[in-house]
Amino acid sequence: MGFQHGLSGLAAASTNLDVIGNNVANANTVGFKQSQAEFSDVYANALIGGGGNQIGIGTQVSDIAQQFSQGNISTTNNPLDIAINGGGFFRMNDNGATTYSRSGQFHLDSDGFIVNSDNVNLTGFLTDATGKIIPTQPSDLQLSTADLTPQPTTTFSSGFNLDARTTVPTPLPAFDATDPTTFASSTSGSIFDSLGGSHVLTFFFQKTGSGAWDAYATVDGAVTPAGLPDGVDLGTGAGNPLTLNFDTNGALIPPAAPTTASIDLAAIATNLGTVNDATTPLEFELDMNNATQFGSNFSVNSLSQDGFTSGRLAGFGVAGDGVITGNFTNGETQVLGQVVLANFSNPQGLVPLGRNQWAETGESGQPLVGAPLTGTLGELQSAAVEDSNVDLTTELVNMITAQRVYQANAKTIETQDAILQTLVNL
Image (cartoon, rainbow, N blue to C red; front, side):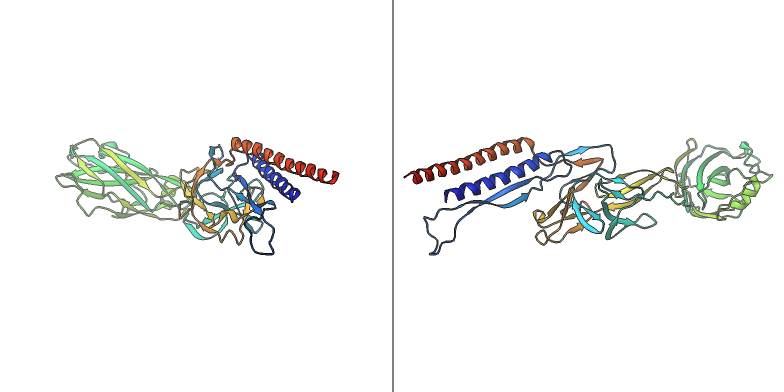
C-alpha cells in the first residue's frame, strides 16, 4: 500500500504544480481567473462494513475550482476597453456560438462591429432610428459610421428681458430691419431646415406703447425693399409683427406665445438669389413665454431649438450601465447601443474554452442576461480593463509548498522501497 500512497501523492502534487504554473503564466492576462486544485482522500472498499482502523490509500484531485474574485482595474487610452466592476460576464458571439468573457479588450472591425482580438463579437441591445434602446434578444453591437440624419427645427424658445426704460419715439417710425433707429434691440439664433441647412433667425423688438412691444423677425437677412421681413410669418400673417404685452410687474400678459412660425424658404432663397431644395415652408413652434420687461438693459437669458445639421461620428463612450453614446461632429449625441452582461447561479460550473472565454454547462445553470447595474450584474468602466486576479506572491509561496509535498511523497516511495529491499534480503 505504501507505493499507492506515494504515487497518488506525486500525481496530486504534480497536478497542483500544473495549476499553480498556469496561474503564474497568466498573471498578466486581462480578465483571467485563477484556479485552485482541490484534493480528497481515497479509501478502498471494505467487504465487511466500514472499520474504524481502515487506512486510506492516498489522495486524488477532486476538482480544479476557478476563483471568480474581482481583479484590479487598470485604466487605458482605448474607450472600447471595458472593465466589469462586480458580477457578470460579457456575452459574446463566436461564429454563432454564445460564449462568455471577463476580458474587455475590444475594438472596431472594418464593418463597425465591436470585437475582441480574436474577432469574436460583443453582443448587446440595439437601438431604433431615434436612438431608443430596444431591450430584446441581444445582438452583435455595431457602431454605424453613416452620417447622422439632420433634424429640422420644430421648436424655438427664447427668454429675454426688454428694457422698460426704453421710450416710445414720436411719431412711431415704420419698422425697417435695415434701419437701427426703428427698433430698440435685436437678437439672433439658428434654425435648421429638412436638409440640415442652417439659417439665421433674427428678432427685432420695437416698443409701441406702455408695456407694449412688436416683435419682427427675418431669416438670413431677407427683407423687402421697404425693409420688412420677407418669407417670415410669426403666426400673425407674413411680415406682420408678434405683439408682446407686459403688466406693471414686467411679466408677459398671455396670450402671446407659443405660436406657429412659418418660414417660406423658397421665397427667401429667391430674395437672396440662392437655391434651397429643403421642405418649405419650415414650420416650428415659437415660444417667448419667458420674456420679461424690467428696468434693466436688454439681455438674452435663454435660447434653444431642437434642430441640427448632419454629422459624422467623432467619438463615443460607454457609461456604467453599458449605454454606448456617440458624439457627432455637429455637436449632437445619440445612443448607439447598450452592452449587456450575463451571470450564472454557479459560475464555477462554466467550462473554460481558452482565449479568455467560457461556455455554459448544465452545472453552471442558465445565463441571467441583463443590463449592467441591474440584479447581480456589475458596473462597467470605459477605458479600463480588469487585471488577472492572480496574486503572484501567493502563487510563488504555494509553489514552494507544492514542491515540498512532491518531495515528501517521493520520500515515502523511497522509504517503502528500502523496507521492501530489507524484506527481500531476508
